[in-house]
Image 1 (tube, helix red, strand yellow):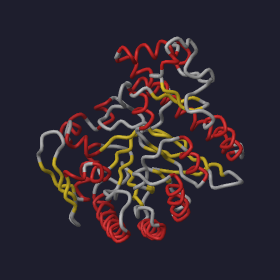
Image 2 (image 1 turned 90 degrees about the vertical axis):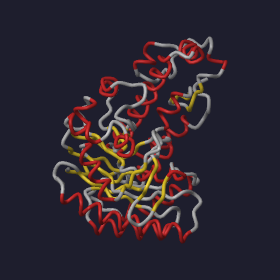
Image 3 (image 1 turned 135 degrees about the vertical axis):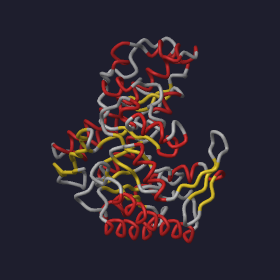
Image 4 (image 1 turned 30 degrees about the vertical axis):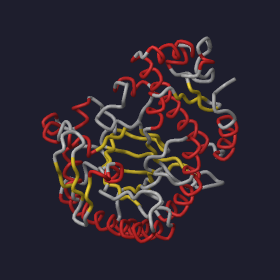
Amino acid sequence: MQFEVETRDPECAARTGRLTLPHGVVETPVFMPVGTQASVKALSQEDLEAIGAQIILGNAYHLYLRPGTETLEAAGGIHRFMQWNRPILTDSGGFQVFSLAEMNKVTREGVTFQSHLDGSRHLFTPEKAIDVQTSIGADIMMCFDECTSYPVPRDKAEESMRMTLTWAEACKRRWLERDPERQALFGIVQGSVYLDLRAECATALAEMDFPGYAIGGVSVGESKEEMVSVVEATAPRLPEAKPRYLMGVGPPEDILEAIERGVDMFDCVMPTRNARNGGLFTSQGRLNIKNAQYARDFRPIDPDCDCPVCRTYSRAYLAHLYRAGEILALRLNTLHNLFFMLQFLARTRDAVRAGRFRAFKRTFLQAYSSRECGIA
């Protein structure tokens, strides 16, 4: 893996870069659609290529359980298995330690969890997390970490952060024993909303010299102000020459705050999950296609959008599909939302290259935040 910072905005820490991976080059800042189980819900790989997805995300926990690492190895890795020839990043399963907490037991050795599929029990250690991700074959792997809930007492946050550092050391040792040239490994900063813990964790991980770094443990219930404070306290302590990834953050307004503070990579299920529930993004805010006002609205979702959905279909048709329970509604809504996110990041990159990021941010947010129900 190679990463090169190409341009820096003169007014803030926003930057553009080129991330060169075994399956292609990724221009940053970048949004990664989430394909948890080797599939971005409702879309094909051809759809993703057509709308310009540069890299997608999979999840080691889910892929380990189904289809299993033996199947993925037999297929020649996840890229061949799902016929996606662009880069892939896999999360280690640390977030599932948090989200499925009632089915897990955490010790310093690792996490014993009960499968949500069949009730079988499994032990994930840091070494196991690396072994699983090596079998999956993604371009970027993540260290095994513990994501704490919010709110969490300081002593618990500190204990979790120190365990995350111990696990990071173990992950790096196992990664170096495997094939570090084929797959990059990112360390993950934890520490909840305690900024001194975040700073300590970031500094310790930077000394371990990972190819890249992530800020984890956000979007778990904290306020937007707390999330921004965490990024502000963490990003400057991560190496300037390495990519920085803010995990699980997807609202455009949050992405802009993080880019302004030097973050390069993002992922979130929000665009696809909202789409499946009738929530659509527009240049002037969010639109709920379930609302009765769209039943005879024959305009596109967003007149300023050039996606295949807005070029072809009306709000009225999409509202009909959703109310009728047609599968096509999920596909078209998802296609539009991901196109919106990918184009939003492309426009952001252009603004940074032109040295006008803050002006772009102001203009975007003035329009995007003006309404909750879209364009009048």
